[in-house]
Length: 128
Length: 122
Length: 270
View 1 (cartoon, each protein chain N blue to C red):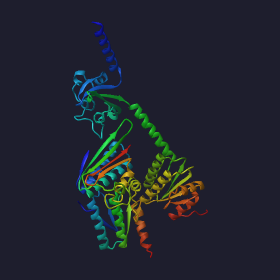
View 2 (view 1 turned 135 degrees about the vertical axis):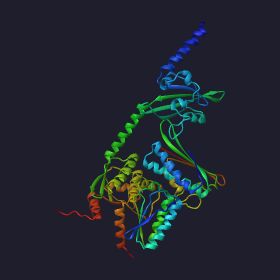
View 3 (view 1 turned 45 degrees about the vertical axis):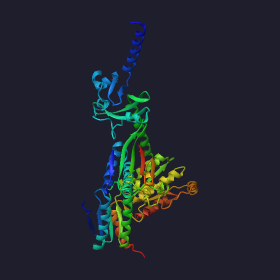
View 4 (view 1 turned 60 degrees about the vertical axis):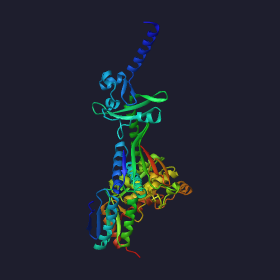
């Protein structure tokens, strides 16, 4: 599922959709909440720093396990110093204080790619 | 976007968040609370978040700021009915909601507010 | 018929025997996911003649869909096979005629021609029993964890969680959820966590316990930890875990007295 993030309302719609999808996939209420919260943070980041972007949410799996993958793309200014952005409490730039480091703590896998002027891609995964 | 109603109970304001809180709605709510506080001279604010199933860092910070604002105006804020899943997520996330008192239900919230009225210390 | 033809005939008979007598559904699919060939099991499963099945889309026959399998329902393994070039196996959830859940393991294999994938082999096997057994096992484990971490209502507004035995990461997670749910169910304003029966506390468990206390705090409940033995106290300090904000006592009695006082009660000799 792909969701375009353009307005502040999209943050709320996308996290409701994600929570429902998490529930259908089989996640318990706590994990559903974590997934919805991460979506909220990532979507807000897009709006705040890039103006618009795309969220892709998909169910992934193999023979042994099932999970959800969320990829967040934007073509904004990009993050200059990814390490710094991931440090808690860093709030100018893309850290938002809690957004990215928090998302990392709530998910099982977290990958971020970004370059100045090249936009940003954040991919997170949570397994059942 | 309909406004969230703010009611008066005893000496306090009661805010019941029933729907999903969009960013702008949340900011407006904060403004409304502070204004109503000044208008009515209420001594405390109860925010019922039983229906909130997602609280992210933005909302967390907004709630914390609201509690600070009300305290500066001489009133305490109590958060009532936080969902367990949300509490767990907030803690694992690292959002502490410092300065915000929480209560399990409306009764306990009111009790605490009444108590706080008597506990003014310098 | 000459020897060579007899040989080929014999080979084909063997292939037919194998393909038509296995319990797995085997299909050869084109790149467009249309069925090029299907074995007997497929035909009997979906009540089709071979000519009816051929050139139908696999998803139409097996899932009655008008498009390839898509999440949040079942994932199409062949899309992954196309992407990675390697065999892929996924777990599908289907429903039989009575509406019961049937778990099917679906494997996709690439067939290469001139270095490119030209067709797919699609094999499904019914793994309902295995998956049910796994689910039952997990249920049992969950039940064991719940039984071993009962939350007891000590008094109106006070609950106690006696922890016994070694706590691993999984159990710690369960404990956190159980305690918080119990707090909501009983509306307890104080939760006593008794770790007398816990032989050892490592950093991870200590972290979890602290997070549990913090989460309970967010709900409006105060936590008191009791039963901290001297060696656990030592290891906690040595590891450097910060028990800030957690009220602790070494004995349950001391903790209980404080808890009762909090709610305005006192134990008096009769």
